[in-house]
Image 1 (cartoon, rainbow over the protein chains, first blue to last red):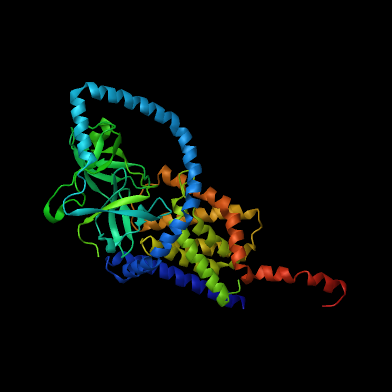
Image 2 (cartoon, chains in turn cyan, red):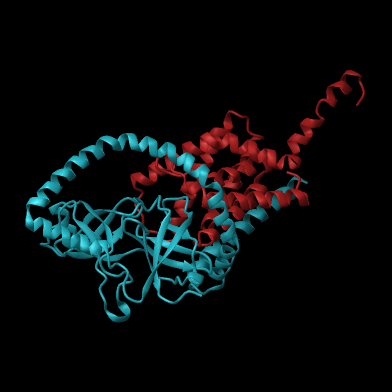
Length: 287
Length: 186
C-alpha cells in the first residue's frame, strides 16, 4: 500500500515537472502565433472580465494597505519636498530674470507639453488591471485590447512619461512590457543638448535605467531630461514617436561616460503604482 | 486529504480566486517596497494540509493560471509553485502536521524557496540579470511577509477544505477511544 502511494506520488511529480518543462521549452520555441500563446490568450480573454471585476472589488482593500505605506513614505518625503520647493523657487526666480534660461524652459515645455500624439494615431486611455508579483517580470495587464484598436508594439504612456509598449494583445486585454523590462530598449535624446543614446533597464533594479552608447565628449549633467528620439528609417524606425519624456539623469560621472559611454536615469513614470495609461494606437483601427 | 467531487470543485474555485486576487489586488499592494505573495502561501497551506500530491497539483495549477493571466512565459510560475507545493507536502508527510509555532517559519522558508526557484528559472531561461540589492531586499521582505501571513492563510485554507482533512476526521472520533479503554472493551 505504502509503495503504491510512493509510486503514485513520484508519477504525479514527474508528470507535472515534465509538463512544466515542456511548456517552458515549447513556449520559447514557438512564435507569438503558436498554439501555447493562443491558449494563453484564450485563458486570459475568458478570465479578463473576472480579473477586472476582482481589481474593482478589491481596490478598497488595496488602497487601505497602500495608505499605510504612502503615509509612512510621506513622512520621510516631507522634509525632502520642502527643500525641493525652496530649490525650485530659486530656480524659478533665476528663470524669470535670465532670458536665455527662460527661452530654454519655454522650448522644453513646448516639447513635453503638447503634440505627443503623432498624426494618424489616437490615445486610448486604459486601466491597469494586473501586475506581476515579482521584480523579474516588468509587465502589466491593461483592460483594453484589439477591440479598442490596440495592436502589438503600440507605445504606452503613463501620466508622467513613457511607460512601455504593447507586447501581447487579446480582444479585451493587453500586456504592456514596461521600459524596465530586460527586453526593452528605446532610442533617446538628452534635453537640452541633444546627445543621443539607447535607454535600457538595469535588470534586477527596476528603479534604475541607463542611457547607453552615449557619444564620447557629450556633456550630460544630473537633472537633464531624457526624451524619446523617435528616429524614422522606414520599416526599422523607432516604435516611439519623438519627444515623449522618459526620465531624468540621476547619476552622470565623467569617468563612466568616457569609459562605458553611459549615464544613469530614473523614469518619470511611476511604473509600480500607475493606474491609468494611454496607448498610442493607430486611428480608426478599433472594431 | 480525501478528494471527493465537492472538494475538488472547492479547491478549483480556491485556486482560481487566489490567482485572480494575486494578479488583480495583492501584486498592487505595496508593503515596505514590495508586494505580498498570497498565492504561494495558499499553495504552501494546501501542501501542508494535503500532502505532496495535493501541494504539487495545486501549485502547478495556480502557477499556470498566473502565467496565463499575466500573458507570461507559460510554465515558469507553474514550475516554481509546483516545487513549493511539493516541498511543503513532503514536510507534512515526513514530519507530520505542522504545530502552530512552526507555521510562520515554514511560511517564510517555503516563500523563500519559491522566490529562489523562480529566480533560478528566470536566469535559466536567459534573463541576464544581476542579483542586485533590490532583488535580495525584495526576497527578504517577501519572506518576512510570508512568515507573518502564514498562520491566517493556513487557517483560512483549512476552513475551506476542512471536510477533506484526514486529521480533522480522526480528531473528531478520538474522544471515543479512552472510554472504550476504561471499560475494557475494544
